[in-house]
Image (cartoon, rainbow, N blue to C red; front, top):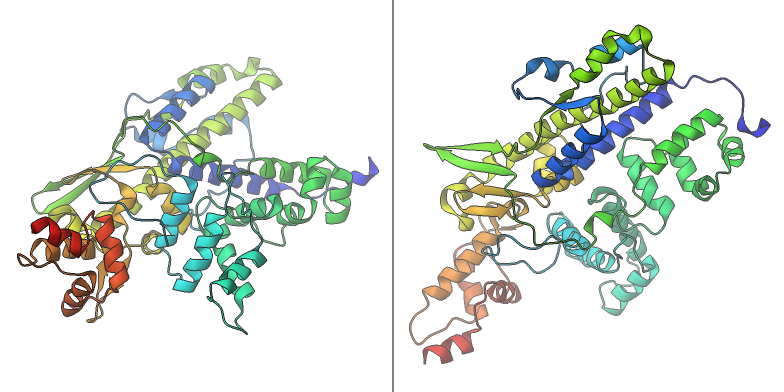
Length: 473
């Protein structure tokens, strides 16, 4: 047993970090759930945790201010008696027509490509990222060596002699692994995947946790605690805490995107409606509001007769209940900030329709709200909004922009709408070619290449000029 390191060390910081890690992981899990999934999760918690009960009065301010602290105080100090964490801050597949509002759930490939479309990557970086994403398996790991990507790019003539091709490939791969949702996607190994997630939770690269993941993940799997403790110079208690954090991470980041039943009805997660000239946003609160159970309060009223085992059991359940209540509140606050930013940016869309979508990226929202881009992606994925235009997928309110010659950005939805208008208004017995449409757009201060016009024309289901002309003839 001597190899475990028996020296006494303070472990308050480690316990605090573990609690905050559990809190942050629960928060990130909750923001990714849509309304239906959240309701199902909370109903399961009501069954499993006797310290939780449904609050019949959703306006109860007492519970909101004190979700279980008084009960925990009665049970004595616990690991949760630490300050609350800071606010959590830390292209592309073919686009579909706007009318296809309720698609099947995105695959991992589609979800990653959507995020790629929202980045500021250069064309060359997008080409690299597309190759990386195209070689990611369903578990979320890349199945091709980065050197092979460099060779593929070299064959395609994307790089010239002397270019730092491998350096740029490595940087793009790291960007995908550390900022795309799910964090850790595109990793080459388990240690690389878990390390990215640990860093995202706020652990430093020099921390014992990250060093263990990067150098001793196999030793942890074998439970070779002696070796880990000796080489990292940590105690047995600390390695057990590290193990608890590590096992809470996701070894297969693609797991949430495994094929699922896509026949479920769509339930709007948010509502936007007009009141006079103003827009109002409301969240769908069709899930239970929870509070700490009155049952636990009654038991604690007679706590002099409680055994140590019962007290420990109550403490554990109340800690979990408290964490859920707080995370739900933080989810609602953060989600509302994100939605308010989106609604504010896309006011013209809600007033006039899809042709008025403004360019908007994940980073724009993340910078305003003060959270990570991947958190915005979690909040907006697989969620729907009911508005004057119908029920639409929330991520459709994001759009890349093309800079016009007068310096302003125009969304791709606007460009597609303009292409449709040009075709609808073309003279009789004459059909504009893609080159003609490109020139007409240029006259409107929007420069779009002929091949880009052809791409959007196909997305809109518009035949080419010869087919349109023969149809009229």
